Length: 261
Image (cartoon, rainbow, N blue to C red; front, side):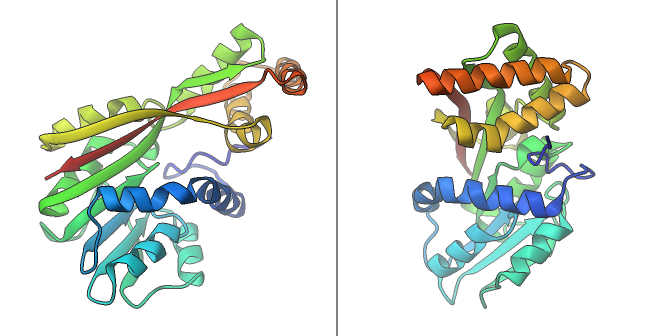
């Protein structure tokens, strides 16, 4: 049992497992990417910064969208992820750098669009990062952030008290397990006035929910001492039985927020 979901600086994550996790998540969300690019007005000649770029899939897609006269920078604090991004290919109008979103080195008004997908939940100081993103945006430029609100996890099929314990432990294990619901707080604090924040629920099958979230949530509950192995095993058996009956359900609220400078 392992936790591959914690990308906070200093977290003891296995890089290879985290890369596999990012690749799997990217496959699930691939169809929505073009929609988010259009929401931000990313067009030919745009200058784009992707904070928390991971292995660079979005950077490569944006590079193709902005064309030869555009530019995209992928930034991540995890050296192993940046190395993997570079190894997978760097378009001529793109570059990858290892750096913190909380202290950007770019001049003011350097970008037309900034993206922070599933990033703020892993930062010690998310407000500082959003302030930096606001600073490097050109007037009229947009910032898009996407984060789960992990306290909102819904699981049908397991013991109720155990489920509450696991959800609490997982939300508390991240730098900011409430990141989604705090988007507007951070955006207002950074100086944005035009903010559109939309919550929606994503649902997964048992196999995907366990691989992407619930195994990590169980690990957090056990490591924090809130749950022992026998209780964890009993909870999983309950989920498996519910899945066999067709009554298992998993969902979590995700917040997508776009703000204009």
